[in-house]
Amino acid sequence: MTINTSLAIVILAAGQGKRMYSDLPKVLHRLADKPLLQHVLDTAYQINPTQLYIVHGHGGAQLQTVFAQTNATWVQQAQQLGTGHAVAQVLPYLTDNQQILVLYGDVPLIPAETLKTLCAQTPSNQVGILTMTIDNPTGYGRIVRNDSGQVIQIIEEKEADSTTKAIHEINTGIMLIPVNALRTWLQQLTNHNAQGEYYLTDIIALAVRDGINITTHSPRHEYDVLGVNDRLQLATLERYYQQQQIITLMQQGLSVRDPARLDIRGQVSIGRDVCVDINVIFEGVIKLGNRVTIGANCILKDVEIADDVEIRSHCVLESCTVGANSIIGPFARLRPDTVLAEQVHIGNFVEVKKTTVGIGSKINHLSYIGDSEIGAGVNIGAGTITCNYDGVNKFKTIIEDGAFIGSDTQLVAPVTVGKGATIGAGSTIVHDTPAEKLTLSRAQQITIEQWQKPVKK
Image 1 (cartoon, helix red, strand yellow):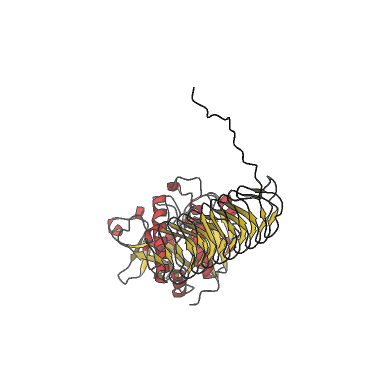
Image 2: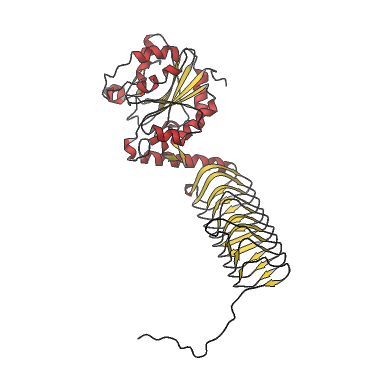
């Protein structure tokens, strides 16, 4: 499918979003943990326009801060006087041989393929509009056609009579317009309407007057063109988006205990025979190997999980890698820069941060391991803490292959536990310990013979 090489995309994102009742600009509200405007930008990039413009108004400085890395030209609409006025702000940047595709920062789920089809079907000297026939058209502008089925006008609902309101084909707002004609039409717009605004939709009647054909195309689903004006609509689109992501993954073989209780806020790739229990959240980039099982109430963000890993319930994993045949949890936390080799066990109420763990090592109970290198075949007992932070700097703990760390041990970094060493339970280790030796530090146990239990007075 060939797209016009002189295509410019304009994203209208100047609205305040009063019905959101928020200090945040509407297009910064998040769907699947990504700003609404980012969804539209991601789609726009897939079309490869020659230029990309964002028209901003309310909260413009905040938008430009959030999207500082965006390859787009920011155009201010100082006063919000309607969609026609918004598009007019971009005209000084455009050349007459271009087409302009108008998108909206609060319509996040428009598919790139739908837009590509609209562009491909619309000759460069014509106007293309995205329309849709829906059961309840209330609130939308109506597409008015003549007896031959040709579009002759778009009438906004507040301007419509009862006959026009009975029309079920609606304007989505998305248009493809030749710039040379657009310059003339925008100069002829008036704000003599119920809103007192300059409607971009009024150019359709002007185009028909000038003998310009109107091409129409329809998206696959109503949700593709739904806008967000309040938090209920945002939640509705969130559920639809989640449903579509989960359907795609299930068609690829993912087993989901309850599709209504899985949230995907990023990109997920799966191997074969992966099973996910209820109330799981995937964020960022997730890679799951073959035969991975994920228990209930887990959160995974930017993780890579190898084959045959079991992640038990109530675990949180972020920016980490888990080797094959490992078991995590329940109630475990793997923090960023944690890398687990194969056959590692991380048990309940264990937190691991910025640590590598060797093959077959176990940290099964109530421990904090941070800034460490753990060898192969290491067993770390309950209540072990690597004391890696002195209040200013962080230091590394090294535990070599085959070491055994007794329960309730504090390893005060920087410190190295030698290969095959054993640390007695209840020890505080402040110096390196030799290989194959038992090291411990305990106060002598004594009994006070004359001690009496206190009694309540």
